[in-house]
Image (cartoon, rainbow over the protein chains, first blue to last red):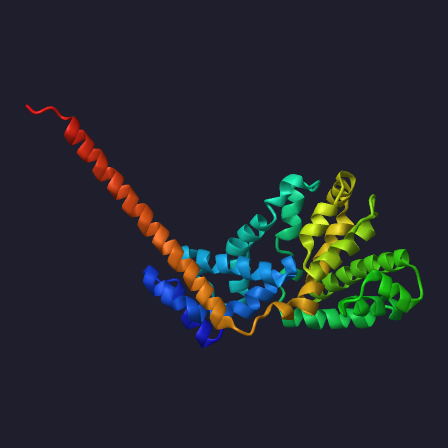
Amino acid sequence: MNRQLRNALKGITAPDAERRRRAMEPFVRATFESFIRYLYRYLGNEVECEDVLEDVYADIWESPERLCSVASERELLKTVYLYYMRKRLREVYRRINRHLYLSQKDLKNLIAPDLSILEVMSRTELQQALRRALVRLKARERRAIELWMEGMSSRAIANELKTTVGAVKMLKFRTILKLKKMLNEYCHEG
Amino acid sequence: MTDTNRKIQELLIDYAAALRDGCVPIFLKSLTRQEGQMIASSSEFWDAADIVRILNDVGFADKAVTADVGLFASRVDANVVSRLKKAKTSSRGKRSTGAKSITKTQKNEKPI
């Protein structure tokens, strides 16, 4: 953990509320990027991410006890997700849940799931593991994922690969499952 | 996402597209009862959803990192200040209602 973040954490866990308020700005500066990226993983929308994160920081200010014994950046992210972000993430779509055919439990698992091994990996580790996994895929599978990551729709990918939309959807689904298996193997090797 | 009775692979791809395009609520609202049940019972969907989220982070999360962190920090500060005020008002309210009840009892007491 770098010095700036360590000092910010010290301030944010102080018993005095006014001191915690003053320490909030350096804490936000030190953690904003990693927190917002993490939230984006579940919401995919920058406006919603900012709204949720604002409440997360205010919750941290209000009850910072959980952060007192944090020793590393990874532990910080994990603790903040488990004790502060998850609660807020679950509230994001609670209002529309009345009109949904997805049960409350499934909605929670989709929007704010339990942490798997993959989800506690750092961004750099994930990028490295994904790169390794992508190389091991067949050329057509890799191309489908790459085109999707470029922002293409299934129809556009089908045109590019000269196949049907249904075949592209099936190909992506199978490839994603294959990636999951490869990443799990990577975790166990690690 | 207008299809009805989508298969599990179509549901996953639609979820992935919704996450990428920032419109998860639209995907959630598009689900039929049957599709909701299919999602609940498919372990493949949940496995794939893990990877979709990771791809979303690695591929697109840069969009969410705003240049002006200072502005965001001031938003957080405003939120904290409003919570501080709320806490002060509620504690003052409690005190004042306590005082009122004392005066009420004083008024109601009959002089000896």
